[in-house]
Image (cartoon, rainbow, N blue to C red):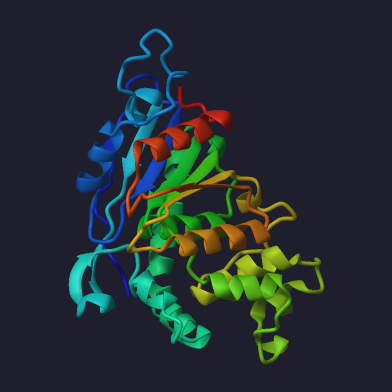
Length: 308
């Protein structure tokens, strides 16, 4: 199945172009609704950005004057969770709140995840193409590109990060999100044998005689297999996702994506070697706050991405 991805909303940098920040909206939204509001929202803790004017209302746009912001729009797809209504979504998934119901078995949750594989694969391919284009415009320097998103956009960007086979990115950011196929990856990292017969695993057949594959890398290879994607070769000893710092943020009162989903994503990502900085915000629902945006800015600056 093919999907049409609209042209992204591109906000050019105020100064010379040194960095590109790609941010994905949540399900049901689009770039026009998400991007401009995010860029104009207040971000605290930004006195270091402009010492001469500490009373100014700082934003992401004012903090990162050399950054091009790209806000892609998800294609319109039928949503199984909303009686197959057509909405903008990066992939088709059930509401996360229903998966926290105790009566839901692990198998039921996994079966629901496999429903999203086709559309999540298409979005991953789309994002990888966008990353390659921006890296090329920046002279091949992947360290000047940041990928992230909010809610379902966060989930999609995390999968794209894990399956990215180019040079490691400058940073990744995620707000109010979760990690698709987390259970399967955790099982592999913990040594739980989820396959009935290793002979059925094409990755093992092709690589076991050549290199010893670590459990974290094997987990990411299984994610590619779950999405029906092929990797030209196993990720390197230090794959890109282990060299890209990640900021994950979540409100404790999130009613759409419970904070436990974010905590579980952090745990799984840490298990496979991702350098995760985690932040929770008491009383915050399914959105960002000026404190969250301020911490996001500080994270990017601390990782020395060329955005100023």
